[in-house]
Amino acid sequence: MTNCPFFPPVMTFSALPPDQEDLMQRIARELVDSYDEEIELEIEDRSLDELESGRSADKAARQIYFKELFRLQGELVKLQDWVQHHKQKVVILFEGRDAAGKGGVIKRITQRLNPRVARVAALPAPNDRERTQWYFQRYVAHLPAAGEIVLFDRSWYNRAGVERVMGFCSDEEYEEFFRTVPDFERMLVRSGIKLVKYWFSITDEEQHMRFLGRIHDPLKQWKLSPMDLESRRRWEEYTKAKETMLERTHIPEAPWWVVQAVDKKKARLNCITHLLGQLPYKEVLHSPVELPARVRHADYLRQPVPESMIVPERY
Image (cartoon, rainbow, N blue to C red; front, top):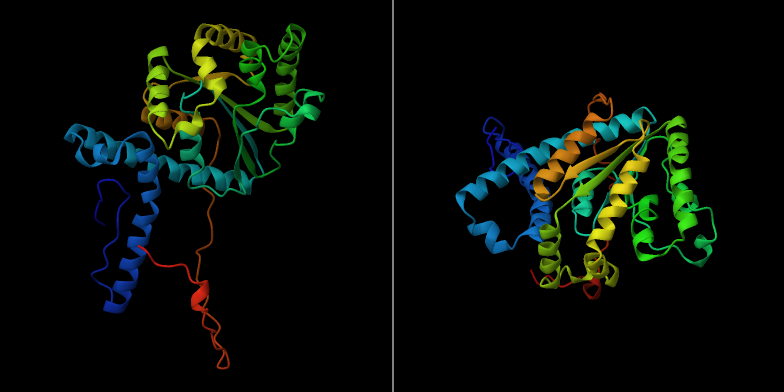
């Protein structure tokens, strides 16, 4: 085995016959290519020039980060298998200020997982009909069945945060939320759902810097809504709302966990490590996978694709 600075070990096949060695080398290259997705995500946080010409200390830190991330993602695959095999139901809530890094950690958690097992619920603002429903009703529709993990990118805690600060709910609705949510979450836990709640914490200065980064990056400007900009102005009101939320909804059955998120990479690794520790998963043993031989028929003839249908190869 040989080690690549960013990726898991890459195989060598010097003892194999030449034709098999070539095939296995192609498979190895395909494996490395598959991890380029993480580099693409990394470029969201830093420019390509920074990645290529950073200080040696930065490069070493990135290597450690990637090594740990891939290891943890391997554990997440084991967790997924365990959830599916034992018909578990898992709900993970991600809350925090705008630009706190919730989306980044959700991407890294789900990146290697089966979207049929681990799915993300990121609900838009309620429509006119949903505003007349029981407040939790639209969230209940996204809860997991047996063998599923649901990650809420913001959740029913919108009422304790943005709705409270921006005046989208009345004082009576706000108080009713706090009366109801502990019982609602206890009910979820009694039903067999494992509920994990994360708050991503960043400083005033860090949010300011990240907002400026989005303003000056054309690929990220879509992330800044008028609501985000208003939330920046109302930083202190959001702080008070957060403090009240944590105080009134931190219950033994579903406690809050605060992730220090000023450093995005550390936050991702710390959150994933903690999440893995919240579930008693064990590796599920699978029978070895054998690729069956392809069935071939003498009368089969593959028809050529018309040139007019082929996408031009510009690269």
